Amino acid sequence: MGYRRFGLTTGHRKAMLRNLVTSLFRDERIETTGPRAKDVRSIAEKLVTVAKKGDLAARRQCLEYIYEEDVVRKLFDTIAPQYAERQGGYTRIIKVGYRRGDAAEMVLLELV
Image 1 (cartoon, rainbow, N blue to C red):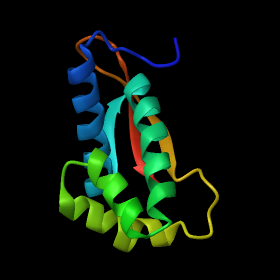
Image 2 (image 1 turned 180 degrees about the vertical axis):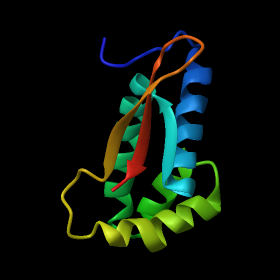
Image 3 (image 1 turned 45 degrees about the vertical axis):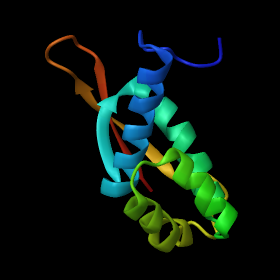
Image 4 (image 1 turned 120 degrees about the horizontal axis):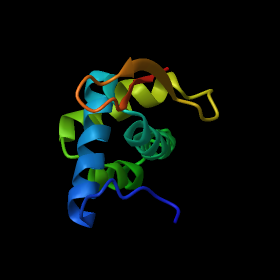
């Protein structure tokens, strides 16, 4: 299939992933389920790679996906320069256990 549906409609799934990516860049770490973290990691790493270019077109491309303008500013001013010499692998997934209610695997997704 190529991507996870999470049992959500297309719009809901896209909004959820955009919210998670925005939260990741704002807080620099989020706790979520394993499959969601894997999808968010893919998107976040692509956005960091785009942000490393640093030009106006890259900024507008990131603004299309990230909800908050101040988060995009943080991405371009602080996060992307940290990874200027790094060729990918900007995030880390750490398993933290299982959720009490439904035993879903919980992970901590953070920027390296």
